[in-house]
Image 1 (cartoon, rainbow, N blue to C red):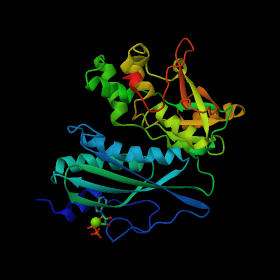
Image 2: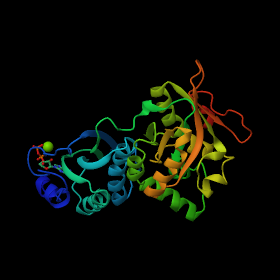
Image 3: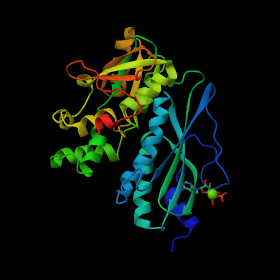
Image 4: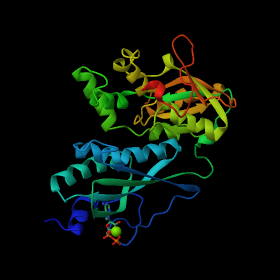
Length: 322
Ligand code: ADP
Ligand code: MG
């Protein structure tokens, strides 16, 4: 039987870049570079709530880190370190090896060091903290959207929620469509290069974890503005586009989550700068709407359908899309 310490040594002890002291002591020692401030975020993934219990451990390791790096990206920051707290029902070497492989592959790709964590027995739960750095005062916040700004979205949205809808039997997909959607659900790509490239260009940013309407609503709330988004402009996969008449699919695009794309705002005059940043980062970006004055008593995010008619009425009640 694998002991706790053998488990940590075998699976979670790796050389960590830009770290004075990593796994193995009572705590890690790190220091942001001169002129940088620390960016800190944490996310918990619970079996049954955030992932299906039969989830592939390799993909789970990837996703647990990816969702945190996505928050670092949305701040316009550079990811540097991560910690990993794990509750496991049992120490199963094959599961641990695959999980650590998925986690560390993404960590290495973004030059992130795993510098510590905690390991206990319990129902499967994964808690990852990511730490990054950003030049002092230059992080992208949710509060910087201004009336007249464009609203942008990176990559494509809706596929992750489409995979969940298919799993729940609400939509039927072709085999290749399902595989592509599941890849998006299970192995999202944190948009770190894009986030960093948008510093000084975007006014505000958020990552799309809870769905476009909810997350853009957070930008609106923190910025005291409203947003209008056009359904037809949303960047979606062919699988989503051809099913946009289905309520479940529209819900996936507008109110589904787990895309881990960036939604951000920028002045209109900065369109070329945004496109250049996206090109440098190798990610597509699309203008999906605009920022308007907040109107009292109406929803902060309005979605216009193909006929230009408002679809969303309330930010809170998503019954509309159910
Ligand atoms: P303590 O009892 O001081 O909390 P632990 O025995 O929990 O120490 O952990 C020993 C070392 O292993 C610490 O450096 C801790 O950060 C690290 N560690 C524990 N679990 C993990 C994990 N799942 N991933 C990475 N590092 C871990
Ligand atoms: Mg401990």
